[in-house]
Image (cartoon, rainbow, N blue to C red):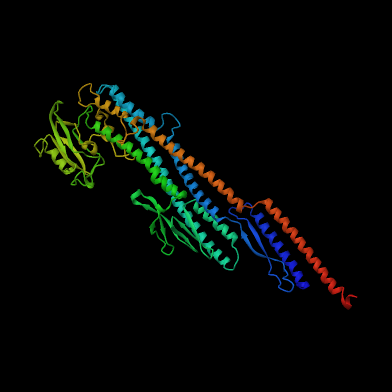
Length: 584
């Protein structure tokens, strides 16, 4: 049996346990609104009993520790689900920016209306005599204006998407910095946690802080973790170590010259402190992945669609325009496109043109100063055999006089093709099944090769009399203008799909469809995250009702132990002062 002073110590242990319980309860109440805080609870166990006959006799209670209520599996599921949600939310923001731009708020202000006005202007011109009358002149001027508007809208659409891609780069740069900052802070907390728990204590609040930082990192990228025996956390992004104990490695945003200077994500070890490994393809979730995905896949896909539209508009218009005639025939013409090296074949990269060249023939017709045709020269082309140099030679030798015949070809500045007629003669093109004229941009209505570079050709911009409305140059022949106007009924892409006149409607509908699909994913993931959040809060969240109950429980226990100590004190007083000689 314990002596009376041992019984006194039993009461003291109860006071200390109750006081600790009140302390932890107060800590929970104080942090009820603290982000990331996990409710703590006191773990109480009995003291080692006194092993004496006829015992053992208990010696009270003690604090085994202050534990953090937490569910690691549930927290991991929530972290991963939230990472996916942030991915879709960022995609949603990018698509919303695109959708807002392309959804025309006012009729007549967008690319779709500009495209209709462009084809209508060609049709209107086709209904007018091909002459220098005021009516025809006004309609040619109108066509130029409508073409300029169309080009402007194409450029604006391209620029709007490209500006969103540039914003993605800014976001990528910012997210990389944020991940690096989070990694440094997690590494520092790892050190503090290991130091605290090495002494046998629980670093509950430090673990909460680390968990909060980890969740923020997971919002940016796909994060996985491994906890070491000393309590330190190894953190990986796509299997690449970003935090290793108390050491933080770094991510870098590095310009990719092969992707128009857009950022790739590189990893670098701390001790080396420079980019080492491209890990862009390792990032598969979070806001960072959304920026990479939207920039390089979704938005790039929209740009490719606009490019393909502009490319085919240029090509098909120029194929028709090059074979027609305006109010004036040509005395000389220089191509708008060029090759890198005029000695290489058209089928080889240094000699390749932006549009395909086929094996075939094109015709140059030469006219005297009275407008009478004096010669037709058929020029054969084989892209597997011919280069720009051989083409120049073949054109110049077409009439059998390479030193100054009716028609001559030259290598112009910038590796372009120049064709010129002799003094007093003019020429036109016809019957081109090789596509060489459109490939070079010879007497094209447009110049450029895609949505970014499309422009009105200088020859028609500077003198609208060169707009090729006629195929033959004969009075009343506007068949070339009509053929261009009817392009609106042709399919934009070789694979089928939208026609020129409804391309824009289909394009905007695709953007809207993509946005709706992402909206559905956002709604579904938001619901899933909310459910997981509620479940985790049930485990780790602070309930004031529960804490108030605990407060009363520990308060009552404290009072009971205090009363017990008072009773023991009275017993000791009676023993000392109420017995023996002194007490008589």
